Amino acid sequence: MEKDIITESFLLVSEKNLRIEKRSLEQLQKRGASPNVIAEQQKVVGELTEKYEEAKAATERIQKQLGETAITFNVVDDATGNATTISKKIAFVKNNRPINSTKVDSFISLIANDKYERAFPIIVAEAKFLMEKGYEIYNLKNEKLSEEEADKYFVILDGQHRCCAFARLVAADGKYEIPNVHVRNKENIGAYLVDINETGTSWNNKDRLSVAALTAKEHSNLFSNIAMLMSQGFNPSAASMILAKVKLSTKTIKQAL
Image (cartoon, rainbow, N blue to C red; front, side):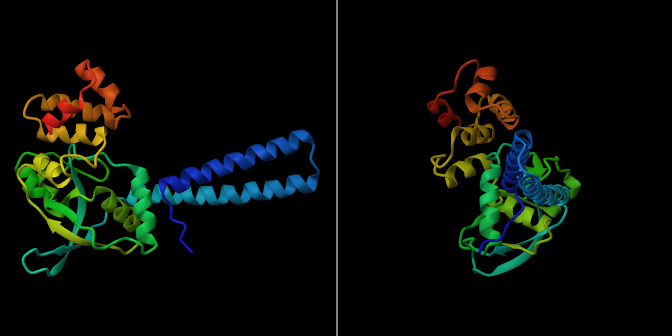
């Protein structure tokens, strides 16, 4: 039997179920249902309310703790194959792929229920190295890192959703280690991300437009601003129309990548 894990999806489902049962209670009261029937429905609503409040409190606690604690990375030496445990916090380079909360929730469930495939590699870089190359680095709470704290962080290049899942589980007082981690201190992060993802064939346009801000030799500010609008909820087409006045073609985006 799988564990009930507190995720954003779990909280939304809890809230939805509570709304449904509350409406049912209101309808029963309006129709003048028997006191016993109403009492049973009130019991259901009470139980769901308690579960929802517990899930909400847990979510808020996890969000507050998220990124505060270092996580153990099992870093593999490519030459020897030996793994070393290193404690670091998680960070991201500006304009890498956007984080999809649904994907994070899926990985949380896999990891918590011991179904995560440990053979999948996680690719990271040293935050200090990337900052020295001029990249902007942000922590899990989307706060820009200073050079003074850079040594405490690994920047996740590939495996962002998986690492976010591990981080949320650790924030929920879990003891987890991130397996099969490989360090790649690449000077051209944009080009590297494109290479390891087969020129973006596994990405959607939102992913491609975001990473284009790291690779575009011309108009990098345009792609960076498009990425900023997308992070605010605009879809790729709308963001492109607002800033470029046209919907950017697949060919144009590939050229930028």
